[in-house]
Image (tube, rainbow, N blue to C red; front, top):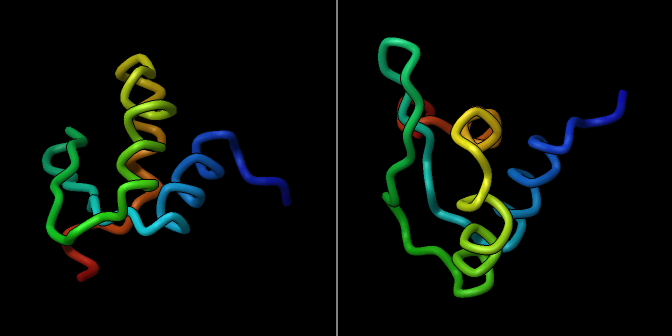
Length: 70
């Protein structure tokens, strides 16, 4: 099964050493930086994920590990 573009973005961010975790509370999504992230992961986030509209960004966030999984 092919992954969605949101799943691919999240996977690449994590592969680059991304440290953000998803916080899902009452169906509201946000991220928290709980760990250090590499410069390349931060640059990837700022270039490819941060500019997305809220719905698309939330879809990417939903593919990140959650604070409850740590």
